[in-house]
Image (cartoon, rainbow, N blue to C red; front, side):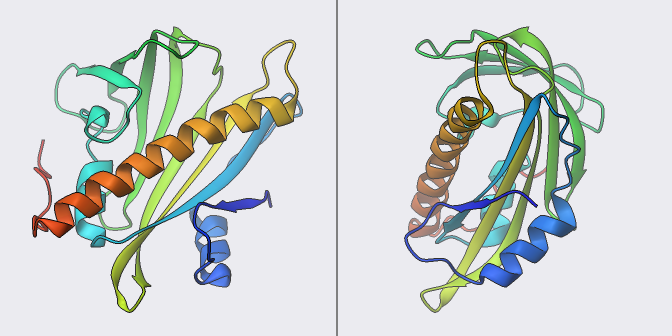
Length: 193
């Protein structure tokens, strides 16, 4: 099992976190690939966080590096999205396939299958779980990935780069969710496509 990186100063329920990671975050990691698991605690209700995460057609709602996303047709398992990436990253576009979308278990899985970037054979799983934080209802988000190590890079360099992107996305997800929760906007954000 790979190391679990917790994005908060104190680790809540390490055993439960590890159990969720083992249960939902399966990646077959070949020798030329790297993998990691990141955890973020969010002070917002799980249904609100999930309503943002599950929107395969609107990742820009919380992902700061996405400028535009186009999905042709109704988003469902196997659907593709074309993502435009903001300048400043070593990428311009990404073509991504929806592999898992489970509203009951709150699981989102995607594979990157094309585009102008260095993340070859990238696959990620993101799960959302209810969690008590400081005595209040909150959310634990776990995101894991596996990706090829590009020629000329090490596994550590590749993991560090991808982890940095995911940390930015999770931090932004927390900010958006917590802002909506503070405004008492706790109903799911347009959960139907």
